[in-house]
Amino acid sequence: MMHELNADAARRTMQVYLVMGSVNTTQDPVEVLRQAIAGGITLFQFREKGTGALVGEARLALAWRLREVCSQHGIPFIVNDDVELAVAVEADGVHVGQEDADAALVRARIGAGRMLGVSAHSVEEARRAMQAGADYLGVGPMYPTRSKADAHAVLGAAGILELRAAGIAVPVVGIGGITPDTTAAVMAAGADGVAVISAIAGAADVRAATAQFAAAVRGMLA
Ligand code: TZP
Ligand code: MG
Figure 1 (tube, rainbow, N blue to C red):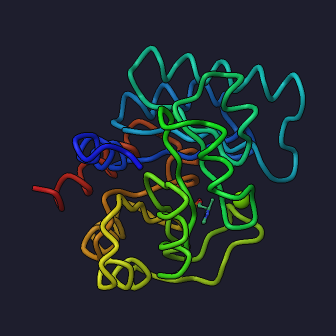
Figure 2: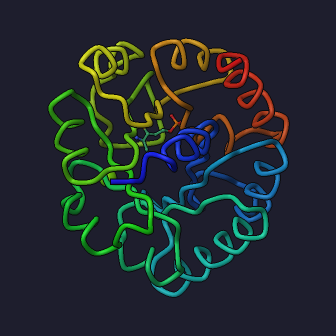
């Protein structure tokens, strides 16, 4: 879907992908996002889900605040599983899981100008996502995670190897339980980056944790 010329840029934005909602941190999420940007994230996803998640006006207000911080720093802002919210806050893209809205319908709704990310757990799901117009795939869980109640069985980095072996060339991020120490294994399997919740949003020093991820990813791209 995305123009070839932009595919490289899309790939680069996958490097360090912070996924976060208010329930993923005990700190002010706006401050966490600022620190993560200072540490080197390349992409942000607003994922306001799970027990205690904000709803209604509070959710919209937080989305706007985070969206504005991203805009100030040139970091693309993606909304998880809510096309209407994405359009309302002029997001740069939408990410949907297999149980969320149909990816082809989301693509039709958001048009060609916004990014579409789709979660995939198999070659079959990856192919379908690409046919629906996905710009990138989120593949996981790479490792056990406590951040998603209904997470799929652990795929490991082998899940990414399998997609690459099948010729799937779109940008891919690994997700699920990734730490700076396991980032090299995820990248070595063929990922373009790592998507992270707790190891960044739950870190005592968000900026330092993010910088560790950025160094680990870039070490594998060099
Ligand atoms: N999808 C698959 S695993 C996961 C999502 C949203 C949670 C990732 O969070 P963490 O804390 O980085 O394991
Ligand atoms: Mg989902």
